[in-house]
Image (cartoon, rainbow, N blue to C red; front, side, top):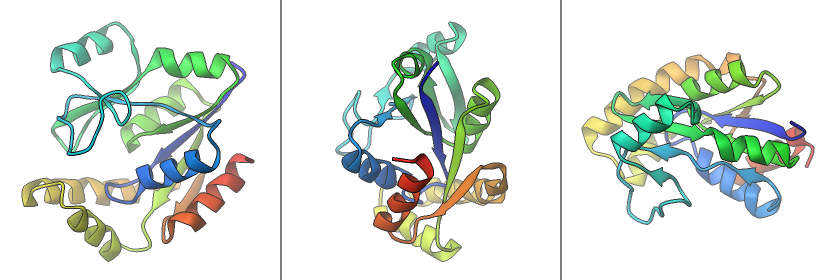
Length: 183
């Protein structure tokens, strides 16, 4: 493997996707993995672009055939995972690979690919994280509460990461990521 792997993780609503999209817009050569999930698409999400939306049976098949680099049950409900083959192919081509995944997945990737760089995206503070989650309006009150419970545990694990980037402003956070990645 001649490529480079960076795992981007952080709590719900911290803006991981926004930061990764902005990084990709500045550096189109960066290869961003598309995760598989059993959750239904949100409005505007496109299968194969935002996620691979798969059935539980299809996810089971990926899991049992060693087709996932990592996977986890997220927020106590839906499964998410990173298909192995596309990531390993990108690394073999020498690509700069970005995985935008949760804490459980980051731990699994680090165990399988010890050379992976782990970057935790943090909110400026708890109140801002809550405001972002409520503001996006994509979850019910019950789902938001479940996500906030998970977010507290994820924030407590930030010291497991190689770098912490505070997403107080997207452009500044991307600048910091660009420096960390040497782009």
